[in-house]
Length: 273
Image (tube, rainbow, N blue to C red; front, side, top):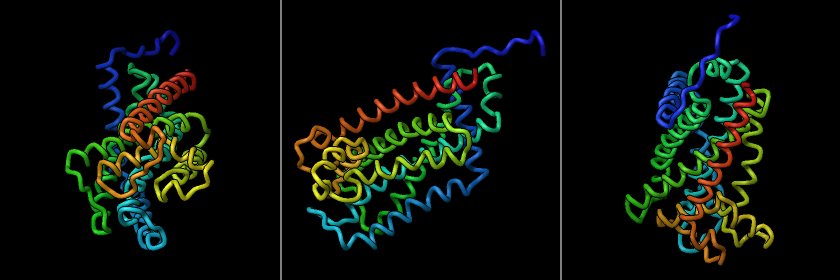
């Protein structure tokens, strides 16, 4: 209507947190109403656990223990980072349906739309990790260094997953369809996860690949989780991320979150202006 002003977004950290929680609740309710999203998200990592454990497990030797325990930190990290696909496809779908424009017409903080989406993905990742840990125990995995260290490992995993969900948000805002967002959200993840210490020891790779694997943020989180869980796979490489994997994992997650949340919010403001 002519002369009608567009509601101005409210400011403040508290208001942004409230708006983000409202958007997160909306996305969580959507997940419960479409349970196949959660079910399919659980089936894939469970399938990876069984395939890698029983098909490849007998062919890979890990110093200091069995492949089943070596594997799980990599599967955990792969699972949380694969939330990129859901974030990118979901945001792209909201963009094509005009939902983002509806949010823009409301007096809410701009960043809350994306923050709410990433918080919902974080909650789904936490649930998936819980189920996956339960499934992994009969396979032969265990946390041997106490509950507090195990919780610390899962917090590092969730921090990495949350950081990567912001990458997914940026991808979803940058493509024109949910199908393209789904493909773009995964195509780069496979080389990232396999060029790491997730599934095989790094010293089995060519020398030039070892450097890439050691400085891969994925590798830092996997190594930190192995240390905290007490699983085999200690790496004696004189590379800073492998010498201080917990600190390296936290720093990588903070850096990725800060950079891509800024880029995603900036992209969202430009796309809806």
